[in-house]
Amino acid sequence: MDIGEIISDSIKYPSSDWGKVLMLGVIFIASILIIPIFLAMGYVFRIIKSTLVGIDELPEFDEIGDMFIDGLKIFVVGIVYSIPIWIIYGIIFVLGLGMITAYGDAVTSSTAFGLMAVIYIVLIIVAFIVGLFELMAIANMAYYNGDLEAAFRFREILEHISNIGWGKYIVTMIVIGIISGIGYLIGWLTMFIFIGFILLPLIIMPYIMMFVYRAIALLLKPSFEGKVIE
Image 1 (cartoon, one colour):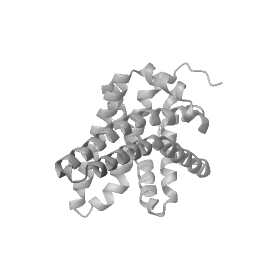
Image 2 (cartoon, helix red, strand yellow; image 1 turned 120 degrees about the horizontal axis):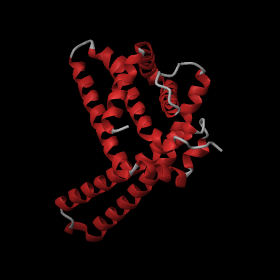
Image 3 (cartoon, rainbow, N blue to C red; image 1 turned 90 degrees about the vertical axis):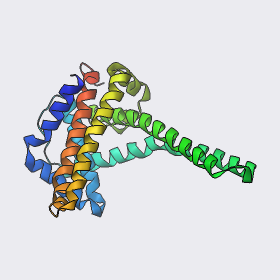
Image 4 (cartoon, rainbow, N blue to C red; image 1 turned 180 degrees about the horizontal axis):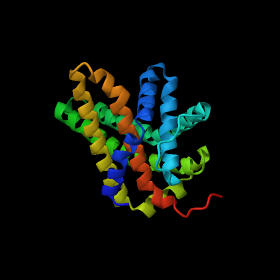
């Protein structure tokens, strides 16, 4: 599928069952209690899993225990993949602090501002690259029926990304990000009217979440076609 087909399919995908959109919205609202957020993560995991095997309908909200465990697995994967970001941040921060300490008053406010800008730019780039690997890791885990170890088969994950093509992967993710960003912006603008407080968490947020993970799964799906599970 090209980018246009992926986006078109994914935008229509949630509207196939508004009841499930509302159900995910209720879970989002309940996520202030912490535990339900893992159910939400487990559900989007099911969206990826079902899409990879060619299912075009929204998954069911059943086997809640399994869905919760899948959500925990995604959380664990996210924590592990965030480690390089924190390490790089720590290294840059220490180096920057050392420079300021060494040069003392010679470091002007503009220099300090420039240093902070460089730090954030580097972190954004690293976070984006790590995010690409993390999404493929989650997809690999979904393909192997929730096997957590599959999320850390780095050579296999890199091969999948290479099969898709780095250019297509990055461009599609940027397009998905822009569209979801516009959606969230529209959602936040509805907050100026009373009904927006209901629409945003109950319909808009879950709709965008379903769109995003459906699009990601469709993008990654060709890399898994014909692959034999060992």
